[in-house]
Length: 312
Image 1 (spheres, helix red, strand yellow):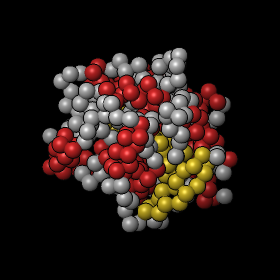
Image 2 (cartoon, helix red, strand yellow):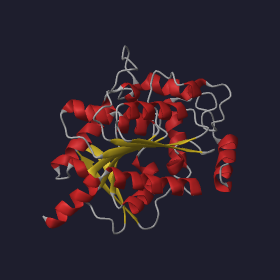
Image 3 (cartoon, rainbow, N blue to C red):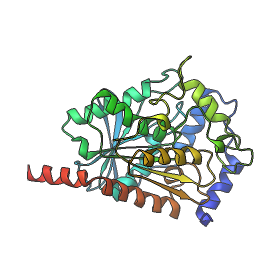
Image 4 (tube, rainbow, N blue to C red):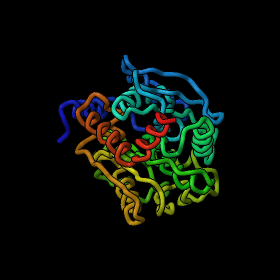
């Protein structure tokens, strides 16, 4: 059962969040921006505008957190909306829990910039971190919703294909991992997802993200179909009623079959990307702790990198 706090959020979403069907891009962005304004960062969180590899970004960190461990983070927004501003509260809290600084990308949005523009921005930013002296063993990828699946997770095989060293690990909140939209929960008429009652917005988002003729099952489009052997450890957080729950389960199964350390946490009744979208709930607090544990456990490299920097 969801907590009282989570249930209150679910009830509010069902009453007040319009469905995405037939929204224009401008309406989608305005609605998303209004939601972002409700999640300011905590008072001890520091924010600094930057550019990584020529891509605009924000550094977010809790006071006192050193600069030697980094999460390269991709916000959500259905390819068409969102900005680093909406991730400040979650990433600040994750910084505090993980003792890492979070680089939140302001990647290019569709439909003005279709695939592979956003993914190219992730790779350029990663190169920028490496060029600035961060080691691959000190960097993890992360993201929420499409930023978690189609960007952070797809960036793993893209990084390998580009010849760059792989990051130490990755995590995703409620990721979209299959842009063919063949996961059963997406079109389930009995779905209970308060943020996606019929799943139409996924088709609209994919339509705007993919250029004409692009194969939706290409590995760098849909990480579910990537070649997973040899990729780093991955952790996914998802709510039990989400339309993207099968995307999460299928990807974790693929990763495990390939021998990749992969963990999935399904939280009963939680809303989409709940660690970021329902921050003041016990479910979100627990998820942030699990993500921090994943980053630490996957990264003996994190600890080794920290020791190497200190000894240097």
